[in-house]
Length: 134
Image 1 (cartoon, rainbow, N blue to C red):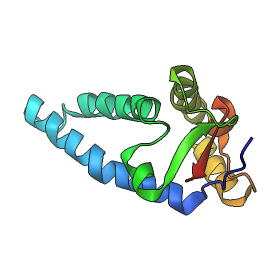
Image 2 (image 1 turned 120 degrees about the vertical axis):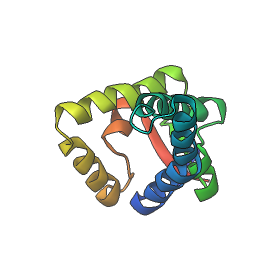
Image 3 (image 1 turned 90 degrees about the vertical axis):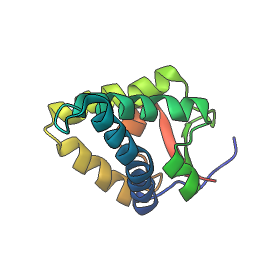
Image 4 (image 1 turned 180 degrees about the horizontal axis):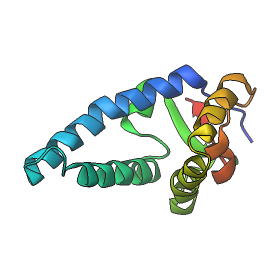
């Protein structure tokens, strides 16, 4: 198995912010154009954002647009690209855990990425993934 450098907190945050600006904002605008109402587009844009976060890493070898720009990607711990089951665990199951802990899990995850040597968060452990630099 080839060792890769784990991606730390700031690069992961940067990739997430880029995804929000490049993908999330246009999806929100598209939702507003389709529904005609800013308050009613939330469900549509949330659903499209969910699909983007779930399917893009599967179809693009672990990358999202933001991750590609930042030179990082999601892999399974064995180095394989993530599949549907992996991404469902990473997004849905981890989302449920974060919701049940009232957001405390998100804070714990951020601290884990910041201080752990392997830079893995709770959702990485749940799904058996890691985020690595290319």
